[in-house]
Image (cartoon, rainbow, N blue to C red; front, side):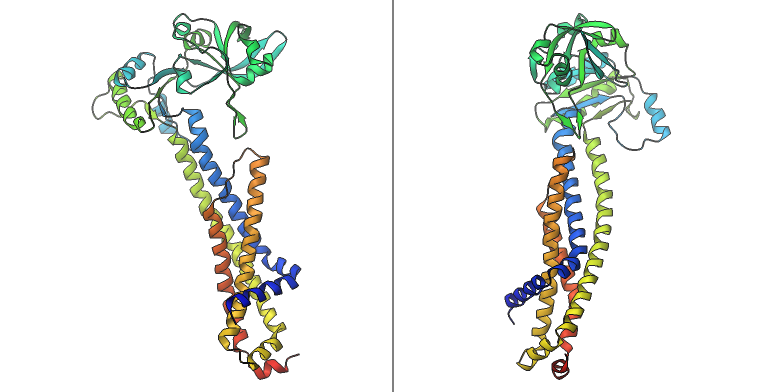
Length: 414
């Protein structure tokens, strides 16, 4: 029997017993769908973290000089106490960094932790829980902010402590409906009036969290209103991504000079990109990738056992058919090939249905939740390979049993 004929026979058998075939393949369908959907979400998140979240936190082609590192995950008490003993990143440190990095596009200072939240009022309208940041003018360039209306903060605004404010898009829209109408209006923040100088274009959401609900003030104005934070942050934007690593080294040397650290002493600051976030996510996905195969493997084994049982039942039901085939000259390997082809075809069919189901689940997750999902070619290939492997492993025994049947005994079967 030709392989194509065996496959067609397998498809015909599966179609003639549609309900039984579906329940036979249910374990494989669910397992493969779970694999494809979970991998799609993880891969989508990986791309999302690299392409959007890291740039939103630090900026593109940028790094930060901070008191505490951008570190996600567990920090033990001793490490936290050491961080708390570090000096703050002061405005005076900016001059050292600027001197070491003459090729930097922008070097900015921004208020650090804790970030105050307050209500912003205009006439009878209020926007609650707005994040308030204090920044120097170059910070807007580091973050690649575009303006929906008005002008950015200037060095003069910072130097003269002007009571001006830059609104995030959500704040401007909620208070004034049209951002252009906000320019020149006076809003009340923390009991004081500020003139709206500009409204930043919409940045969108990250994992369902809006990045447009903030107000920026000149850093000097911010510190007069809220006092100096426990630390400030120096942000540096380099011309290209390849220049970031060298810039970080030079910034580290400049900060060691600024803090008068002797050779052998550890840094009392951190020079970071958003790689801390990327590394944290990689560790998390590594854990997920160790759990997912276990869950999928259990489902695949259960599905394979069901296929084997169904194939053994099929051998019993088709004993007379096997006897007729042998009586007209079919060899053992022909019988074995036919039943093995049926087993592999069933398993591949289950894998294909699982892939379609997983892709549909991934599409729903992407549509209905803030989690991005991307179905990858390799996950589809792995899913189909799993189906074929299950078909071979759990189809060998039923195929061998069918091939060993005595044709005389098989012909007498009813």
